[in-house]
Image (cartoon, rainbow, N blue to C red; front, side):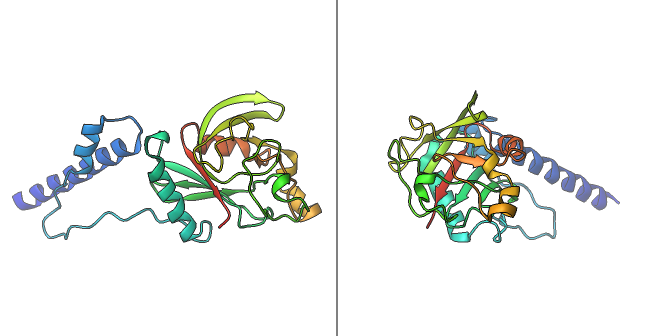
Amino acid sequence: MNKFLGAERERRAVIKNGLVLAGALAVPGAVSAAGRAQLEGMKLPMPAGRPATVPAAPIVNSRAVRPDLMRRALAALDRQGGRVGRRDRIAIADFAAPSSQKRFHLVDLVDGSTTSFLVAHGSGSDPSHSGWLSRFSNQPGSNASCEGAFVTDDYYVGKHGRSQRLVGLDPTNNNALSRAIVVHAAWYSNPDMLKTHGMLGRSQGCFAVGDADLPRVFDRLGPGRMIFATKA
């Protein structure tokens, strides 16, 4: 009986400590740098008779995000370091896919889940309006999408309604803020465009999503998180 009670107390302690650790690591700013390092290095006791396990990396839906693209996005997140303040979720715009596919992926790095949305590319990236992005540009006036890592900034209300500013973090997109490359909703990104035209319309380089999708995108994205856009 004593052995059973002791094992049960140990099991409860492991669960409690694991929940505290997971919560502390998942909430940006929840602990100091020194405290975070201490938590990350903590070895939790394992119940007797159970082998220790190595924490697995998040399992991301490979049907939504290409594995090589996911690796590149995570490498970009590491490369940007402290310039991206919130690292629990990222967005990946896979412009290798046509605009008729849900290619704007919101990836939860804590539980590995992915939610995907339609997103338009710039008219300067697709001059013939084929539905495929053919080139990127960082030049003002190009009306093209630009490539690289962005960090989401504040919200504002402009000509497209509620929108979110983006700061380009790479030489390939560092004009994003001055070019007003933002996240916003647009009628030409609604799903009914696919029924009538087989593709979305084009933006001026912004990440334009459907009207009904915008609240969900903003809810999951928020400020201080990374968007990674590429074609390769």
